[in-house]
Length: 367
Image (cartoon, rainbow, N blue to C red; front, side):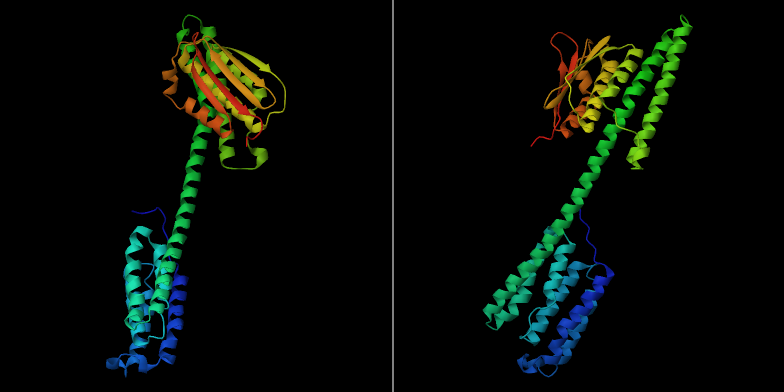
């Protein structure tokens, strides 16, 4: 099973690997003693060694494309060179083993560890050099571990970047929902009101149509500001974030749509801009849900500031049940927004009727 990480061996590294393998193995031909080779090939040992080194350099070029067969071939060639000249170790085989563990997931490379132990340790063990066999065993395990660790780190970085992208997409979707849901809901309500009185009260219908037009223009302005913010344009060209001072205007637009909103502010103190923007969005979403689902005639918004937190509470006198409001993404978005600010949000039907949303947002970062 894959780990979501794709490792590739660049062409320049292939060149360096091929040249490095030849340079590291060439001393076998130059300084290797033919007397230590098996009797059957003692006379042609230098030629055989040169052929194996050349073959090793050729197959190494394909390590990035076919890592498993190339790794097996290099391990076999390394064993052959050890058999011809026991004084030299596995050499480049450890580098190739490490690279293979980096190129492929760990589950696919475990088998090669056993094969590498045989090809690296067996020639030394056959000569009774158990010290060298133990040394090559440790080198095999270390080489594979380094490669697997490098791949794990790369896979973790890819996963972190992917998670960051998903979180940013969720944030953009949540902000876009906050920007448009309120004004579009107002447009729907005003259009329905205009349709109801179109014939009986044309003047009132025209007023509702004008309010629909104003809400539509406001939605376009908010959308343009949101898109400028997402594109990360210059700071002076981006739309400013809403603050607590914008809540009265929000309540006024709700009043134009038939929902009477009473706003109360208690306490004074400095509230960070991020907390103000989050509080505004929570009030906006709560009132929008009331307008859409509650069949309410009045709502009350409380903004209370004390030494440590900002309390935001929205109550209405509607009949919409909690299950209706849980069906959308509004409450989820409000909870996520409160959580990002280090606060909490509770929402549910009131005992005396209606619905209540209460958020507590800390004014300072909690430890």
